[in-house]
Length: 210
Image (spheres, rainbow, N blue to C red):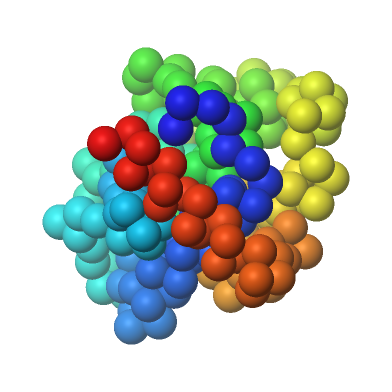
């Protein structure tokens, strides 16, 4: 896009992305590498979720590798060495993607895992013990103050979008909302007529750029 996304364009993109991820989660899988580069949109405005090379079955008895995903969209439990994670890692990535669509730039653009945690901490405060591993639980984290998201974004993001972001960017994975709850959130509401018009407009913009 060569201009900021409209709110309806964000809703159309996110709804399609959520429907794709819903299909993944409904059969007990987690994508593990959600990021803008893995979201493809064709000339009809139809979104395709891509790159399933890191997708795995969700099993609470497994110890998964931490070497997955892309740093800017990686959930804090992975950055902090917790190998017992679930599909809720995908929900964190969705929160980062949503902010990027609304705000126009990545939210947490860390250069290393430590820098990434610091950037998250500078916005959300000290990590919740629920996302720590045995090793990271021994670390001393700064007493980062929790920032007010509406103030942080300078009022450029609506109250309903802020509420949704707060429910996605949560340290404790079990407290992050599900795909279904995301789809039903107030921010995501759009009439089917407007949805179809906006999807077609996205497709026409892609045609113009090609």
